[in-house]
Length: 73
Image 1 (cartoon, rainbow, N blue to C red):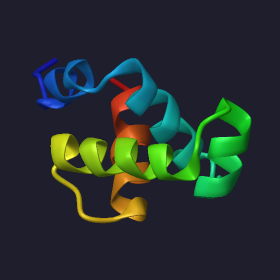
Image 2: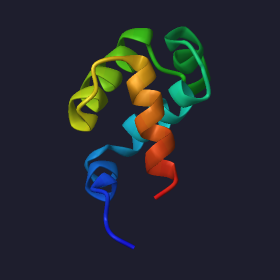
Image 3: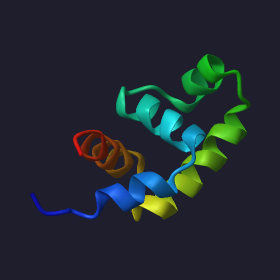
Image 4: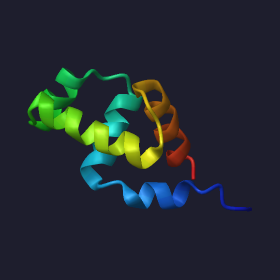
């Protein structure tokens, strides 16, 4: 099978960014993610902003779709 380019994107994400994106893909809100991971909500937002740039997406829905696609690689 050919590479779809997602493997490199997954490797660029930090473990925390991956963890937060997985929460987003499950439909969790920033406040819920912050509470679950024992982080400030502003920290969650910061990680999401960084992850959006790395994934080349501009919103939460696109990030969730990209995360689900990466998990299938």
